[in-house]
Image 1 (cartoon, each protein chain N blue to C red):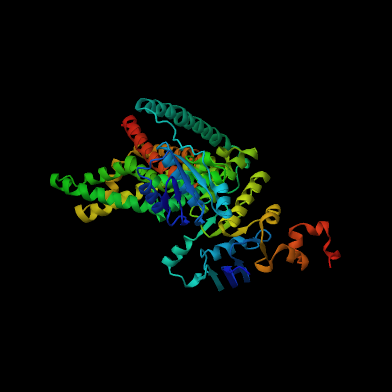
Image 2: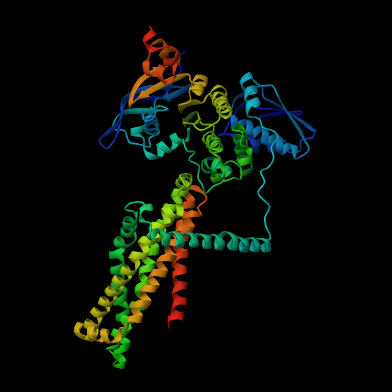
Length: 360
Length: 254
């Protein structure tokens, strides 16, 4: 380019490849420009693409900020045509929404918590409980085989992971305790410790954490995907209740299988403890079982089962709640799935603490 | 003078497992022309496009894109080739985690050293071109189907590529939006010399913009040439596609 008087002659080409250097060169050339009007002559401009046009507009704006009027003139027919098509002068800097103050954000967050989360969660819970109870007596209205499918997905497929994990945890728990008990000569109490801890606490908790990770996430992802692909809308417009059609079979499946999974976890955990008791403390399986029969009371078994049912409800409700809340396409599905797992595990722990306080 | 070929597809075959999708497809796309690939639903058009783009491996045949054999390109060379083309996907293909402005700016930010202000200016120009300046700070999930398509087109042309691929750009658009999209495509071809390959079903659009057509039916290429040539040569499927068979019964044609 070349500056002569108040006219800037642009030569060669102006495109993506030289836009940045063009602007820099022009700014250097126009530094200390003494006129109040700049004519940009395009007669010698050989090639220009739409980025080139945007660059000229950008130059005009930069000069405009210095109270300089910029006019474009000349140019071959194709250059003029491009200026006509790609020249958008009425540029308004895109504005972001105004920022909220700290207290406004807090207030908005609290309002959202009450309105969006708690109210919606309670409504969903009411719906799910109502339809779950009423559909027990109306099996014809359920999708054929859906209860079975969900029971397999949530329960049967989790047997190995729940059982294996419970065995390891029972084993580790007994191993850590055995050294201390041996010091006090209280070897036999390893049975009490393992059995009560597994039955009333660890069994239901391990099962719930595994199911929340496996099935809670899959429930959230499945429902969220159904929402973003308009499947839930399709159900609604076919006069089918999405909650009843999608969530209730999962609730039934988890309510039936969670107690069994918990029992399996209990048994495997106790087997782990029995193994360590035999290896580390010389307590034979026969002695272990006899002591277990003396220690174990129905109340502990009952508490474990009640906990598993409460956890099942929490996991399915949380997964469904977040699945139904999805807003933004594929990325939203990922977000709600993660949130559903984190929240359901947190709720399981909170509920476990509350029940612990109530039962003991 | 006949324009040079920017894409050369020779004897292309493709299959998913044992199911044959494309069989012995050969055609050329000429420089600075709008080539429309058309055919019925399930004819294999989108699969063909993905093969041309090197997204699927071919089973047989060859594809030369901007003078390069796609099968022989190293990944780095393929990346360089991708910089010379814009692709407009059927469902937009915008990244949901970014705003529309950030989506469009992404190639410029990643592949150029342009100043941030200039990038904003270019992005805004492209959004103006597709008549969507208000969407700058919106997320893709906040756009309607038509707006999403326009935003995706803005991203596809942000680097002013010499070659543009569009998969069903007009699907779901109202006639006015479709006409303005066609006008933009024609402007890109006429003013910028962009070579454009379009897959579309929109008859009105094809009549407005197509320089040449490639007609595919059940994975086989039926015809390539101009629409007038197809009509002169009495290509039955092309007639049926354009519903001309209804107006001029095929039996009556010479």
